[in-house]
Length: 226
Image (tube, rainbow, N blue to C red):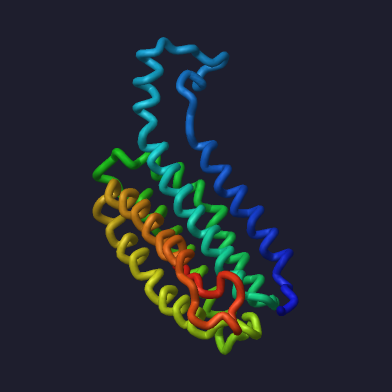
């Protein structure tokens, strides 16, 4: 088995993913906390105020799902990548740059989700996810080119399958970027659906048993999206 050189990179990446996904919850406001000291609301007012927070909750769930899927696929990707170099680390930093930025457009979209005639927030939100998908793609393409940084025993069929999926990955994000210029609510709905779509292949392939096991590693047959 190859000696793995990516431990520090993966640990650092996991920390950034954790920070980004934690910061999302800070966008959710507690009703009555606008004043000091905080106002305790009657049940009827509390439920009404919580209901008014639905745009923030919708943006939170969508961004949480997207970052979560990206983290899952980042883990799967580094099952195959065994070595690092400066370019790979820079590309990984570029990906993390977009990941940790997600809470900002999430908060922005939550404020403008109900303003159907304004689309700037949705454009920034979808643009961030598009940049994330392109960064993910660049990371894999660089690492897998002629098996540059992959395991010596990596399954070539798995690499080819992942590359095919990565070729498709940015396409729906480009389409969603176009949708964001027209319809803000559709942007968040489709982004959430896309997060669910991209988590399905890996989940379903857990049941798949590769026909050749002599030259594969655990998880080598899993496909991923990004």
